[in-house]
Image (tube, rainbow, N blue to C red; front, side, top):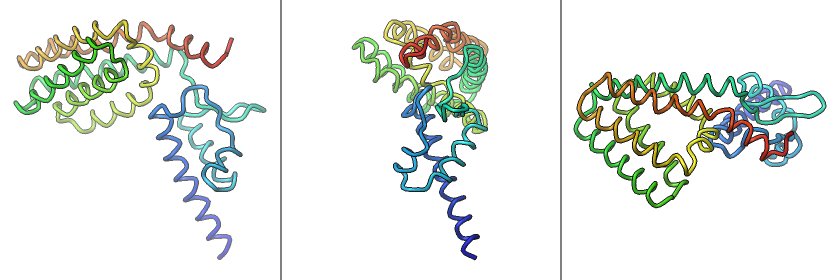
Length: 227
């Protein structure tokens, strides 16, 4: 009975650790390349190293963590190819959300979208990059909500969380004003109910980010001191 209880406790502990570490990675609290030391994590969560090891193995199987022989675990850094492919899929998700929003958005939802766009514009003019990044996410979220497709929304959110740390580097201060101009066209097309134009402009808006993926991967490697 004690062995069963211990096994259950370990399983529950590892499940909790998986959720916490996964959240830290997806929220960019843990960044690509960050080391995940078993002993440090065990002290942080006041558990033995066994549930920590199990959690890291699970996260490795889902592609969020990389475990290297004699080097331990680290938050997995996407390759340039993977990042480009993710942005291409994200462009399709976001393009579809804009198309559906042009067809389905209510007047109240259009007003929220417009306010989000105005917030992005003001923050870009004020060169508030951190504020702009957060407001930009809210604008895209408003368009996903307007699509009224919960499956699309949830799948896109998972992918967006995976690429957000890279997206933060891509949409830097130089590109804020360009993003605002592109947003204006997307918002206008959705308001006008022009499904094709909304779809095309949103796809182009997101797909163009993929072109900077190689630069971002190299910049993150340089920040971590890699050759």
